[in-house]
Each structure stands twice: as C-alpha cells, then as structure tokens.
Length: 87
Image (cartoon, rainbow, N blue to C red; front, side):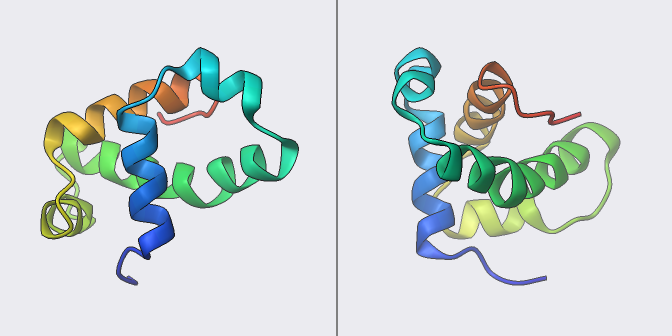
C-alpha cells in the first residue's frame, strides 16, 4: 500500500476542517470524481479499520502525517455529506 501523497493529505485535512456546504457549492466535476475515486477509497479503508478492526494500515499512515482520529472522523463525515459512500 502506497504512502499518502501531499495532495491526499491536504485533501483529507480540508475535508476535516471545512463546511461541506461551501465545498459542495465550489466543487467541480473533476474534483468530485477525484474525491470519490481516490480520497473516498482511502477514507473507506480507514473507516473499515476503525469500525471492523481490519488491519488496513491507514490509521498508522494518518498518524504518521499528522491526521488525528478526530480529523479522520470529520473528513469521513464531510465526505458523506458531499454524497461519497464511505460504508
């Protein structure tokens, strides 16, 4: 499994600290696709590790780059409000 890129880290941090309504209004189709296809995959794996005790490695990777558990939860919640399926 690859390490998180700087772009992925920033995207996750933006989700964790943003109002989904503002993001939704300013998001173009390319950004929405990237969120679902790339960041959504990461957040789904992170969610599975936290809820199903699967060893995906994302908790460690998030911690390593300064993304806290609260940041992860907030990013997941924001992604869900943007219509990304995380379950």
